[in-house]
Image: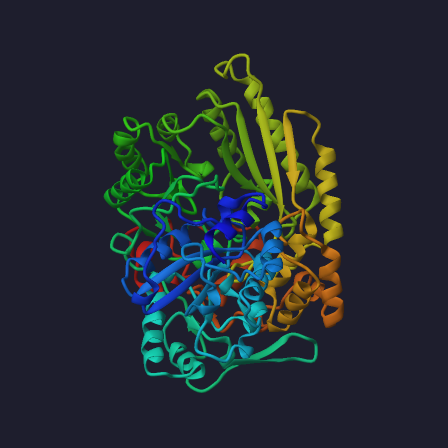
Length: 614
């Protein structure tokens, strides 16, 4: 289709900027002069995918090599998908508008389980068979990475190989191997067997599963020379690893429309519900000089007037104050604002507040996660009510009038008293504001409470725990609503049905592949979007496949049960997770990694916080 005809079709959809390409800093190459074409697919809308830091890094890194051309691909929204199907337009790369069916790699980043049907829809739009066994040729290879890959079994039938852990090194090793096999005319099976020998690569077709009579997993067996256990990859030195000096600047507003500078990977805290806090271990930091240089370069090359410091817990960066001093030397004069997401309540100091006064003046966000101290100890949040109140007092006296608090519902051992504690804590913060003589005059306080449903995840101490049933979550949501008695507090919570499915696919095994495919055939896509989600279609898919979602989501697992991801090694041992689970049920807290090493297993890399002097 020529450009004029294509652009005319774009005028019929809601946001044509999602599909036009041609943005500043996007990379155009001569396809005849590259050896490998890589379609980097984000299975959600442009606005969400363009906000993802991993895509920004790998897109730029791949394109820094002359032999690789990486293009971006996003899930088309419903209006444009209709246009594509009516006009026989296959899924295309934004840079070239070529069909991705003709690329060497189709790579998905899987950030959340509810994007799985979008992945299937994108493969179908590309004109490709959904199942890996039906794609016989060496190319295109369907590959995937991201946090969901720590349990890829529910989508194992659709993907040729998975990247475990951080991708900057292993992705290029696989691409180089592919070039070698493509040059000699080798077949797909031979390439996959060779790729499985690379550390961090999981080829699901080389593994078979067997089940017990009670439906639990009996074994996962590797074929031939494939390793019995696949170990994740990490980047050991963040100061020397590739980081982009520019990002693609979108034409339309995206979710996080700013420059993003990563300051460290991993987390020292060990919150027992938090998958990211375990699968990205060990903590490795960039130096202050590297962060400062890279952030300044990004702003200069993109024109952004805001830069966000990215990490799981920004205020745990050991050089946070000298870093802010360095950044403020040029951001103040250049009228560039700084965003500091992921601040910890227990190290929110007057000094830090003084720094962020230069940064922003909107509300502050904290995550107590639970309403009572007992439950915060169960989840190892290691934050006291006194620290919460102290942080709010510091913020209010510093001129802030709004606070947003994040909580979870359905945590292990939770009672109605814990739920009431969420409302009580919100009320105490309201009362605190009005008790302060130095509060902002003439302004009322706003406390926003956001409550998500707890989802047990692999490689956390709660991987053995059941999720509360959907009916029970709804009851608890209504109970919390009844406990809030002031308009100064606003409450929001999530739909429990999507949380159930998220749990099923987080904890599930390979038998769920047929459920996901059936749900897609039933019309499921954009399942994380309220206006698209249809639980009836999902229920019909489970029933047709004879599989119970409750078996995966609402059942406690014995410590000795074989779990679907036990053949994958994310450097956190099962023995450590069992110890932490027992401590949780005794409401015992565990010190953070900089206070005391608890032997989680991440020391095997000999890097980061694991080898720091404590």
